[in-house]
Length: 363
View 1 (cartoon, rainbow, N blue to C red):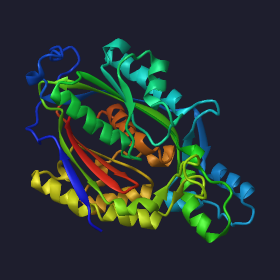
View 2: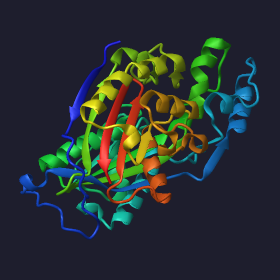
View 3: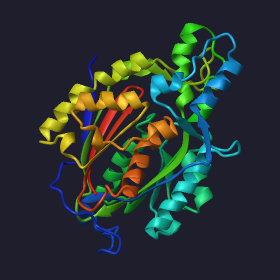
């Protein structure tokens, strides 16, 4: 299948980004000085509840008595130990708002100092208005706000969008919020091999909130990126809107084999772009990649020649947390002391559709 691609931003020489307490942001009127962007803060909010793989399998047996669910199935197929599950009264906007509050507190930034809010996630409270407004109301933000969605690449595309705005001088600070409630996309009533094949993967979805604060900078933090699509692969993973499409099945449907094939077609364009930049993922200090399962991470490392020690594993104890996967890995890397000024970081996103994206950073 043919893959289309798009490149955003130049790959610039590595330079140290502005750090907290350094020079102030370029003035809004000084477009010429706001030539770069950087990630200032990243934060996540993890709900307290955990649901083990055994508990998930027990629920499936109770809801689908006509199918056989072998013990340890989710561990063998996906490497899942447990997933994060939000409280029944928590919405995607609540999880995102908690992460936003944390990111602002870490940065010492007041809500009125944010110039733009982007909500980027698979999950959503509402079809209308933009979910960004719901998050803004819960966090005291008064800036312009809108949603940006591209399945599990939503946050990565939001970073791309924020970088363009910041380099153009349109805004000086952009906050990206993400709230995922993937556990609610689970399909419990399955009958027959076909439904099991497309329904079992949905049982690994997890819940989380994430936030990424980006700023204009005088030195490059975001070095550049490229995005690729194979849109003929869109039927491989679907979550239809029941208010818009009648007769389509409800819940998340994943044809894992077909989805993997649609990802595989994007390997070549991504690899060629890296070669054109004179970059190799194995030369980075950290590689963050979307993690729909533990085995997929190993497959990705083989595809892109990445040593597994450069990856921050998250899936086994969270489940598939969709667009929040990359922010969580950055937070885990910070906790492990792997992110330091000057560290070279690659964010590699893969999403149903299918789409792939790479953003290179100097931390």
